[in-house]
Image 1 (cartoon, one colour):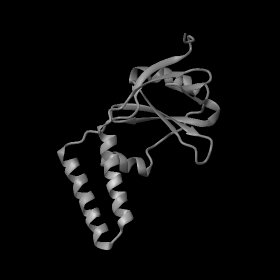
Image 2 (tube, rainbow, N blue to C red):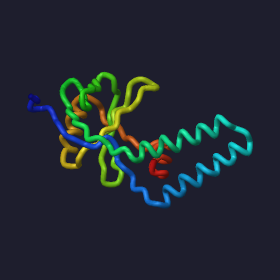
Image 3 (cartoon, one colour):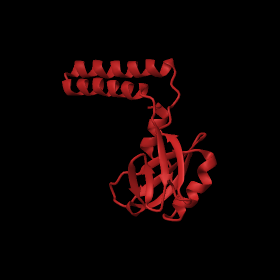
Image 4 (tube, rainbow, N blue to C red):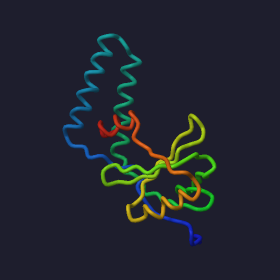
Length: 154
């Protein structure tokens, strides 16, 4: 049973970007051009890499996002069965991407992975207050790689 100060919500693990037929045509055109270049130059490892990358993108593309249960407790953020303790993070930030909101936990370790969780707008104030009770809030922005991924709709 959850404590009264615990905050629970459900959200998809990632946002599915809108892709149309032209996106797939572009993917195959770029992949074909890279494969032709690899064959022409005899870069067989690069050819294999391009093929594996296209297969991975398509596999990930057709896998629907899971709906995950999140809970904020006094210990940290529970993401399904996994616990992210507050002590492992130095700050958090809120990011709005279109109509979607996410909380990003920024790790203390230099090469640690940040944790990004989406939440419904209606739960936003309670989530920010709960995170703010344990971590300082910091401005966050999409980095260069995130902007490229969003632009390419990967």
